[in-house]
Image (cartoon, rainbow, N blue to C red; front, side, top):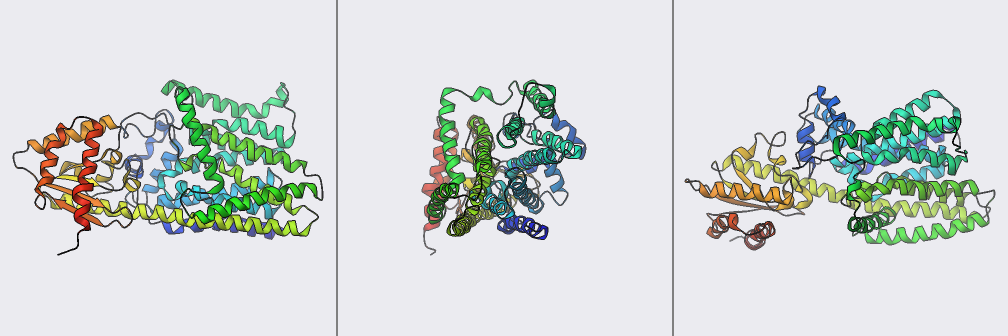
Length: 538
């Protein structure tokens, strides 16, 4: 294909990756964003070296996470230069990483898989529009997966280009990207294996136990080994291997099954017509690929080898770290999804190389239908993230207004939706998100999922605030605030309007278990606040 068309394809990939997320650039912080941005945006520039030998989140979640991530951390410092209270710079960084990653998929499809520009374009667009990517792009904290994936794929692509050209600069740049990937997230420890298996599966390079054969991999192995030794020294584990109990392995395999379904068919519960269309297209692609191999113009065995590498090896290497993640999240498959996207490109390539014109037309039609299915779902998922951000912004504004207007010592019971405020309290109540530290003026409690820390810590914190409030001689008021998860509409109830609200709050510190305390707070909203909001105005 002429060079100008390749350049046009590059521009198209970058724009296609960024366009679905252009509308989120002004969307507010949600969930973990408050803790992450609140902590990292306040660190001085000189703090950067310390992140190489300590966890980047300190203890803001009530425990010390085993995460050495200096490079993601510094991006939050950079974003804060435009104003820590503004989410715009953080969103632009996320979108930029996603666009670069889509271009890297295009490059891998061209250089590593040997696809023509049209097939590589299909692969890059699939990656860019996968609905599951929204968590890594629309959610500011989701950068923790798109950024390591960027340097992982860049390292592999540079290594592939070095194999083709023997340019030392490419090899050196690949090693640097490996270093950055490792110190972005621990799931990138699979990179040396990815390089070795690429040479074995795709390049058919024999890997003998000789210096000449092993030398290209030694810098990657040395970096990874040093990184793992550092993790052992700091945390007593290399890769959370202590989590691999029999029970955890069973639940992790179930999570992995859900991850793979989400990667192929999209987000559950979103635009189900698109899901079924995607399933139909995927099945049709598989059948047509068989026909393409049967009626192929030339030997398709090289395509089979790259298909094995990207659809089996790459996805497996990207998915294995999810077994020790501790929970399932779409962003955990961000790196692995590049294998699925390139697999689609390989299928398109196989179909384009047949003697039968109708199969070549089917290739274009199948790719277009699959992209349409993904784009439809992606629009819905991005809209969900936008709605969560809008509710989150409204909740912060409402709590701040209430806290500044209420008498000192007022008890505020916050009922924000989990989708907007998971792990947000108390971080969302402090600068840079509010004018002052609201927790110093009022007491804010919530059900456990909105609190930053574990259930036992939430229990002690909540009971302590309730007892202190109950013991005050000036009897400060109670205000319960509830936000509609879809619209952000505020429902407000005070003890002056409903005396039973105060009676319930005074009983809460003596509630038996953490579960009972949590249920009592949730029941307060379900039985007092929400029904009152549903009543017609007099």
